[in-house]
Image 1 (cartoon, rainbow, N blue to C red):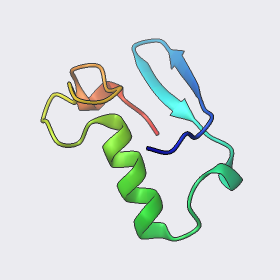
Image 2 (image 1 turned 180 degrees about the vertical axis):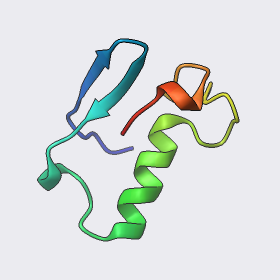
Image 3 (image 1 turned 45 degrees about the horizontal axis):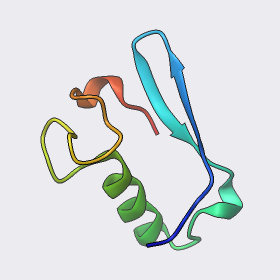
Length: 60
């Protein structure tokens, strides 16, 4: 498991993690996989990540 600093920001009904670019992988494929896993893309309601039960309200 790796740690990446982030801030979970909320605005209205949406929320999402905010990262500094240099804390994320440079390779696009690695970055995309990391962000999808973080949000909980393995489940349609994102219940296995920081998503809030509705993909429409989660932003990266």
